[in-house]
View 1 (cartoon, rainbow, N blue to C red):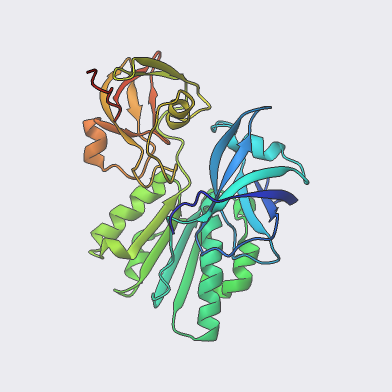
View 2 (cartoon, helix red, strand yellow; view 1 turned 90 degrees about the horizontal axis):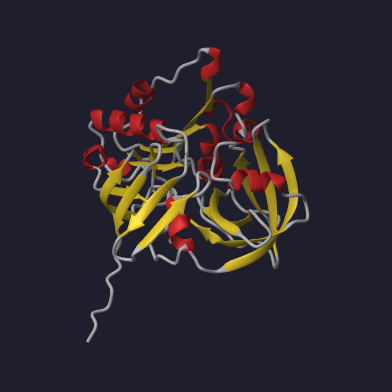
Length: 336
């Protein structure tokens, strides 16, 4: 399912704290919630000032019901400002959202599925677990298990709902309590036709992709979504130069490069805004006084090492001061 330009006005119907760092928002669209596939997300226009909004994507929790959509937002003090703004909302607030869309689709033909969630990455997998559990109960033609990983027991958000759906097919791993995830053993226990769906930080994605490839399984049977990464360095302000535009743009620490380019009127192709699709990858001409902090899961290790591209939606430049020189797709019209 591709992204949609259709927008809805929603009311924040209810706000529920799921943990000290995760808050669930129940959103009631004017006219009711349209259906969405498991794994879908909402594009939310988050108010960050009196006249300014930023676009953020949040996974939908569970399948639609009761005319509402649900999202869960983890508060990230060092993030780009979206989570802090969402946490300032009160019940009754009005927001603009784009129609549900998905880059993380469930294959309903699968006969064996393992779901793996880390932290807030559990959110898109709740709907998948719900759909697969219902199918298993009704037809018995799919086997489903789920692994949920968190640093502490209180951060195992939504595990109560998952337990109701899956029973003993759900296993939780609390790393702060000394529990470990034997990823290689979990993959080895799967049938050769099984599919693995993963959502979590980029470090987990890298580990899963490596273990999956080492097992000799087809890449098409591994599907993943990341909720982003904090990168190798703390976010800081940097400068971007665009020689073809004759522009120099400052990128604040709480802004993405993509947001800064769009505010300056520089058109950049983009879709997922999570570092997954690669549509916003831009060519790098030079990095001055710093290094690229790649935060995507699209570019390969070889491409990252080459440093010739970066994904504008999530990646940054670190250094003091740091500047990146980009070659955009813009070409000035030839004068006659």
